[in-house]
Image (cartoon, rainbow, N blue to C red; front, top):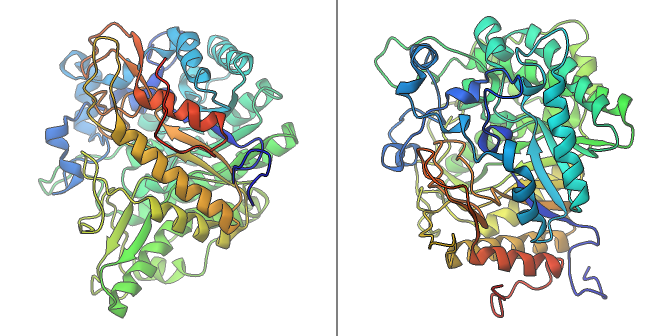
Length: 509
């Protein structure tokens, strides 16, 4: 229903804002007694080398054990941009001020686990790290922004990865529960919205980035050591499900007023043709996508995974009480990233395996694509929101949506990024249509509202921001902030609570 006083379909109090991650903005990887994290070893991958992940290159900043050992011994040989970020650690006040100037109601961020427990499982938390986030949350509130905080955003303490294989081990589950309990207690009343794991389903693509699993180098000569090994990936997934559920239970115990959600990379799939076989392939792929949110929202393993597990010799090792924990630790709301849709073609397998790819190999001729080959599909946004709400009937928060592009910035950091404005406008239009359809969405966060280090490739030149940062892929620059044309468009959009999506009369101040 349209709000008669504002003319907006978005509810009063809708949380407009933006999303970031500690490993992509903070920098200061060796300050404040922070310990090393897996993200500190994510190498820069140039746009030319990336190739949109086609041809099976090294995916999503994956690290083989040989690469990791070399980076530990000779870090000077590697370009590791996530160690630098955009220096949010020292510059958070001025950077947050720019976001608040757009009228942000919410700022999604994450806590670096190794800033709180440098080794992940230390006897006592690091007070310097706790105090840093106190200061950030206080500044958010002073500026009128609600912090929405992810506990683990592709950022596992390196000690847990090397010593225990990350979330392959229940030791890491226990350490995560203690970490969660620590920050819930410390920030009670300061943080009302929490998320457990960022894009938890991406463990199928890269278990090192998503869950701290360090794998040996492959013997087959390929550059991708993470293909296959489904038994390991689903065991890791189970351990993260348990860790997530335990965190939900602790959050509800410690701060009954807080809400805590999951976060998945939502992959909406279309059949390539009307052939029933192609539609069957969509069903299979949807099962792999729904699996993660089904467990976290419904509290149990869905029926459709049993055959896949049986026919792929996957035996989930559960400890006594795990099933009860999953049932008790269901999330309060569902959170998604949405960037693109995928085309599915029948593979001829009775029980196929997940594609394990970030971008569909089959191009949709009806969609344009970003400079990184990501299909742009605003209508798919409305479709997927309807599917999610129909399945769970839980409130939805959009934790990521955005467009990475090569911006040609002038000396003031300004660019007429009409391509970003068009992307934002078209997606918010379809978000509004989904709300009119009856979908309960309570917030929208643009990914990377300030230029940051890209997750998958560690590029700064892949810019998402409304606010520019004078930095390049190698850490050179002044850190000076600039306002792009999209800054003023989003400011206008937020001021109208989504009612004014016109691209006319954008006031450049």
